[in-house]
Image 1 (tube, one colour):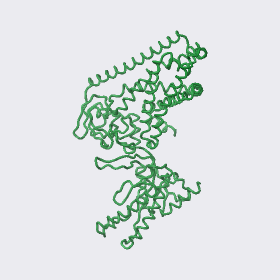
Image 2: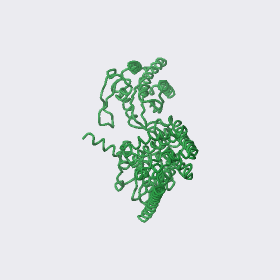
Image 3: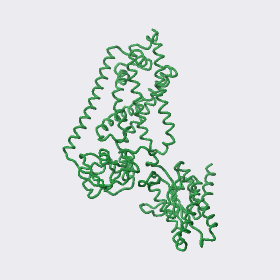
Image 4: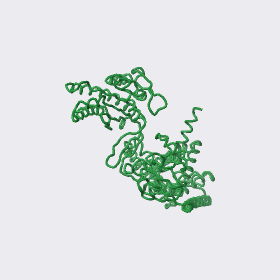
Length: 576
């Protein structure tokens, strides 16, 4: 029974796009393998034949072959379905390009697949590199251009898909130069390998003995067999184009049916109203009428930036799909009036307003980096707050109070920066610092702990410096927690800041606030202790209730934050 919620979560998290992505990755792995095999032509045709032996050994292994062909058919079917489903093609130029390239691949590859795979199945043809290169460079040179176009289209289509998949990943910025180099070098070497191998075969084919050994009936078949395979390929190609034609007709019929079904009005809450046919999503309606609408993922339900809040009665709205419900649950939203604009397809007039301003990240935004647009990653949040600032302000001139608070925040920021963190937000006499923007989770946790110790040291120095002006030393509280958060530019127009959002940030703030009742300088979560690889018995453990969480949370209480450096260094020496 315990596995049932996990299974349901997996199902809810899976969408058509995830299936298409998995199938696409499998096919792209095949393409990479095939291209690397082609590249062996720069060595020799014999090297290509050795390579294709291992290539075939893997990809025709029965379980792998079943997965591969299932992925190929599923990916093609989902591409055709995407042609029918997509109502607007103005997300970005690259997306319709990817769809067109993908739909053209089956038509271009049909002849090659039928000639090689079906020829082997029906007539036991043993066509390998010598026979195929002879066809392209000697017998039918026109097919060489078709195959070259196919290779380039398949590669560009796959690279676009990989880009859309990885562009919001934390490591993408660092990996991008290497991925670009691979994206250029692999097809270049493959085409050069085909050229070198083809030139070699063209020269050797003038020798009668070579023809005797490489152009036998078993290897290339008879003319009648070739004509049969060509007719099959031609029929399947015509059938494929007919299927695409039916999809276009179905799109037209759907548009006509939607118009006859009536128009609905979408009101954006700012005086803007558009009329669209029933069946369009709110985001598609925005794009159709050039209304700016935030959507980082381009309407794929991979983010929640297109969220809207429905004004008035939301009871008549269609129920959220499994994918929409999963995304809304993931971001902690249970309000039924909040929906994803890319998934909601209203059937009656609707009034709403956008929760994310388009200036922050519009559906057509191009210039921002993934981290600035929005990115999910593991970060460590450190909240620090100055104690007694209200009493401090009561008996001082305003400028004196501001001076002391600024000195406090300066000391805290210095400690954070010295230990690899980034001061992020200043709220009154408190500050949020982030760790892990350019470090792995373990390093980020250790940096945050050392920063807490550094804060204690710097505040001690500040207290000594201001001892003549302070009736009592400056005290502070620190809360540290780590987890998956969303980072990006948040705000409006000229008031946009880069920050983090998520449960991990909120918990760190709650822990900081608890230092008052627990009479300690810092509280760190068990997540931080475990990820930093601190021993279990180095700090006292306590379970606390966190507002917004049903279960109590295990934390470690730190009476003196200055001791954290020794604990971190000690655990590092033990690990070494």
